[in-house]
Length: 172
Image 1 (cartoon, rainbow, N blue to C red):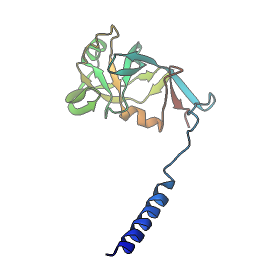
Image 2: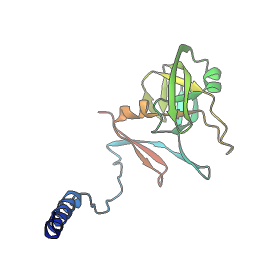
Image 3: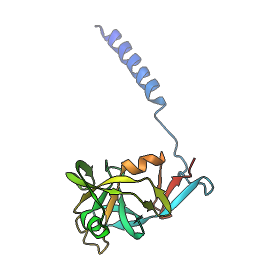
């Protein structure tokens, strides 16, 4: 290929790349807000552990709690601390499931939770994995992880670190 054809091919490639990526540039957007009339909110506690920041939400199981659960959108399944499951006398199902999230991946036994809620928001009965949650060393006792199996039921969530709130759409 001659020098002229190479220059022309290079110019065409550059023009195509510019056209393809033109839509990728975006202007800064306003932060997403949760309108009071369309959203429900749950108090959020932010725990700074130095190398890691955790968003914690209150979960009530039966009439017990609130218990602090890590809001973990990366966890495939919600998990409950083994000790808390024992304290509450939750019936084991006899099944094991793989669980992955901020703590890595492991096999977990499951228990049945018929009545529970996130703050004041009732949650559907569920089979929840139990694991031995480690001590964070912060003095805050973590009793579970609220994973994407529960969070995805809301369609979308808004984590507002400035207002210490978790926003959830109102029931449809």
